[in-house]
Image (cartoon, rainbow over all chains, first blue to last red):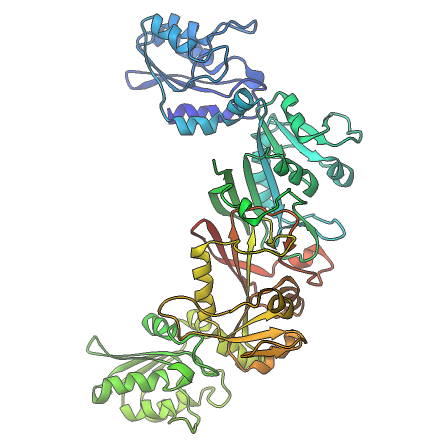
Length: 314
Length: 314
């Protein structure tokens, strides 16, 4: 299942409204099929892996990170049906599909076909892997990551607005990988006006991972950009993962509305003093209310800079 | 020498104008004497260790973290003279004394007495251990550590000034150990007025490690406090190590004057948004000038909080 989850990572940020799923087919202790959700969402991971395995899939053991879909789509056959027809000995599933069109019926279809099914394997890892899709299904909005690149004293620019460069090459490359994993990137109208950021992924080999560009605000956006008026409007973006890259007003607006699920901080070993703070008012009235909201999940050095990853505490 | 350096740590913050030195006497592979500079600066480490070893010091090997003093003092005999009279086979010295009254003459006195002398052992560790004394000797001012306890976004208080508590118990205990290692603690007049901080060491077993309390400003200070008018006046404090604990104006004033040698950051996993920033203007005019000044030397978790230790880069 760990290998299947690893395959699923290949699709994160590129599968549109589909979840990025990984699938491995094993027979006689050999891997005979590997699949992951393809760009745009099709073929599904199971279809890709089954195509590789061919007839050999009969009697095999199939690992898949999400319950195979059971609903009929115009874009292809249901994976649960495909799996049943391949007659594996067992299907091992990490998570039940939160999509109400499947939600257990994929598992039922497999069992009805006489195939042994194991569920709830590496659930927490799978939840993390599928966080975007789960968020869209259960909460009707994408999983939101807020990125802040600042000095040690929490400033994102000098008082005159200059901010090139605060963090170094390694941290910037890391932040481009975060971009590649997002379906869409959002910045505020002020940032668009000041910086006209490209928001693209500038890493060799990841050229195909270019997220949608979203502007928060009421101004006209440059060509190729989409515009939303309020943070709540992310519900209409119909995407799984959103990366918010500031500035201070936009970041604060998302925090104020409780719409940030993960916080990634890049901090350069510099002090700026009176510059531009990373956040405006986030609507906090009492200090004690600030506690218990964030939990460190990763901390490391990236070149001279520090990286920290915080998840929502509950 | 590592053991001697470890003994020297016991005196840091308690030896007044004297360096905190460690001394170990070894004979036939057994430790027969251990000493460290005593509170107030006397007895010296060598005197303490020699008193333990007694006659057995003859023919021994003596490790000391700083060149033994050679100048005559009304407070006790010169250590180089004491060592020579004990007739050890060899004296191993980490650092030459930067005090111009000794500065090599302790080593010369030992050699003239026919004792073998090894110098420059674990020099960088010894420089760190004796950073305060070296700073006072070479630069005429204490080694200055700036402590900042903030939220992830660099705020040290809510907009209304409330700041109890940002960091948790473990971080606070750690910061009290930092206090115990300081000869003096300094805060600005604004902090004194707002918080009337105790600035004492509240850790069981460290009751005797209470630093002097210094206020920066022109207001009247509470009883038991000393007052200086400008950061440059720390030269008159005649102490080895100074811990600056804010607030934003005071921290910025020390940074602006280039008087901070080490930065210790305690960061709680909280966001405050528009509160009180940890620093005022530090006199930076170009972003690029901020780079290259600080180098991470330690990073770890303290309970839920993060601790980072930065040293001046050159």
